[in-house]
Image (cartoon, rainbow, N blue to C red; front, side, top):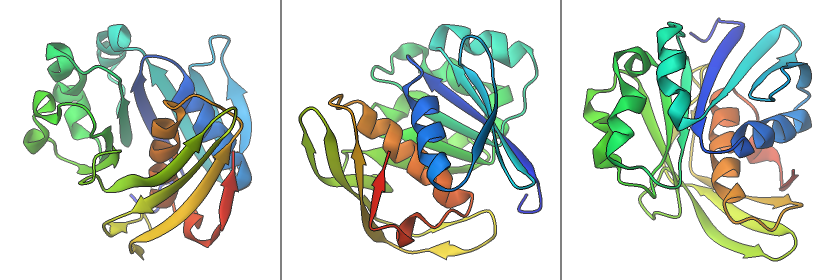
Length: 202
């Protein structure tokens, strides 16, 4: 997988917050937006000869995308309310992803994570999450200290140990923290040196 030059990233979310945050964060690391559809839920980012296909999927649209036979490399689940329909988000088609980046502030028992083929990386305010928030200030803008608490391995097989970094965003919406966490994990897996940045301004 580390030799691939394109990756498909599915994002199950109620709004298009995460796909927007990924685009903004990745621009810091020299990714260009080379395609966006009218709805804004499909975007393609390019960096040299690497392409990232981002697809934002509303919960009620999951079955439509499953019927397309879309094979995802990464699946991000960023939902505020994971109800009893959570199982449908991870049916057979979506159980073959290489990485799952999941908001652990929800009831993960609804997702049957033990049946997934890929690597699960969690995020949230939950102290047991792989990446969490150590502190945050939210007013008209946001400043947060994020902490990678456990080692993860990037696609290039590089081991990334625990570290802390700061992000700033021109937003007063607390829910954007979840999108920033998910985008940060995706960036690390793709080999971006987030740990070298003192402060990331999104």
